[in-house]
Each structure stands twice: as structure tokens, then as C-alpha cells.
Amino acid sequence: MRPKKFSDLEILQVVRQCLVEQGGTVSTQYIADQVGVSQATLFKRFGSKSNLLQMATIIGPQAEKAILFKQKLDQGPTNAPVKEQLRDLCLDMLRLFDEILPCFASLHASGMAFEGPVPESAPPVQIRKSLTRWVETLQGNGRLRAGIHPESVALTIMGAVQHRPLRIHLIRDTNLTQTDEEYIHSIVDVLWMGLTVHEDRGDIG
View 1 (cartoon, rainbow, N blue to C red):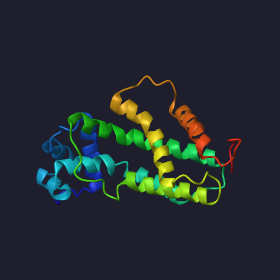
View 2 (view 1 turned 180 degrees about the vertical axis):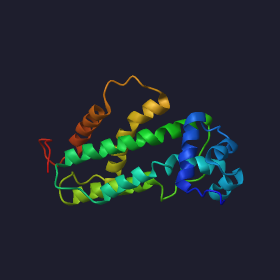
View 3 (view 1 turned 60 degrees about the vertical axis):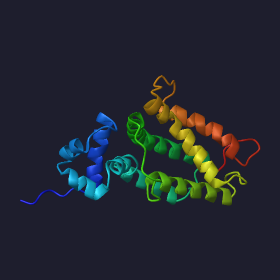
View 4 (view 1 turned 90 degrees about the horizontal axis):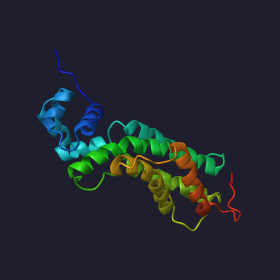
């Protein structure tokens, strides 16, 4: 009987579970046992423990959700009110960060650093680029304030969204007073004051 073949994403799913359970000090032998492969197989496919944990954190099982979110951004803005679209996108982004940041928290606690820069194909990089294009499209057709670099706008949006899960998972500040939905509505209201092209700061289609 041939041994079962595991895809990279299937392996990274298990690695992520091990990382959340045991932190960055989890051994590759333990991971290999949980996956059902040898340590040699893990190193052959991922190169090193650090790279394995990095891939599990930024490309792992949440990759499918990240790809779907990127595809949503790549479809471009709709005719719906921009503020409403921004709320929907930010809530989707918040749910992604809620999955990714517990792994980052585990790695941070163990003192482990990533090897080299994040690859261009990594979901966080691709989402940043897609959100930048989404903002640029709205600026180009006059539905968002021009004159602000679209990448700066994208990074500001991403930073505001990820701050809540960062505080919860990394700092352990769990006594926040708003729900996820209330938080998103609040930060979009604040961001909107700087993004709208209308002097009255009202919504625009």
C-alpha cells in the first residue's frame, strides 16, 4: 500500500494547529508525527523549521480565504456606496487577521524571526497590492479623495483593521468594549472623514 501523499496546504494546516497549541518551540519531530510523514520529508519540502512555520503563518490554511478575498478586491468597486463597500471589505479583512495573528503571536512569544523577506506571492502582500488598486480605481473615477497615494490609503486601512486582533492575540488586551462589527463601523467612520471627496463628509456612490 502506497503511503498517503499530502499537499503543502494539508501539511501547513497541521503545522498551524501545532503552532497554536505549542508555540514556536514545537519540535519538527512532533509536527512530522502529527502529519504522518518523516522529518526528512518536512525539510525536503520546506527547507527549514523557520521557513515551515513562516509558511504556516502567512500562506497556510487561511490561504484559500485570502485568495477569495483578493479575488473580491480584484473585481473592483461596485456601484454600491463606497462607505458600505469599505465596511464589508474591512470586516472580511478582520476575520482573516483573526486567523493569522494567533500564529504570529506564538512565533513572537518564542522569539523566532522569519527568514528573509515575505515572498511576493504571500497573501498579505497580494492583498495589499489588490487593495491599493481598488483604492486607485475609486480615486481615478472621483469616488475617493485624490492626492493621497493609494498605497498609503491601503496600508492605513489594513493597519486600522488589524490593530484590534493584534491587541487581542498579541498583547492579550481582551477587554475591548465593541463587537467586531461595531469596531469596523467606527474605524470606517473615522477613515471616511479623510477619504471622502465631499466637503460635507457625507457618503457617495
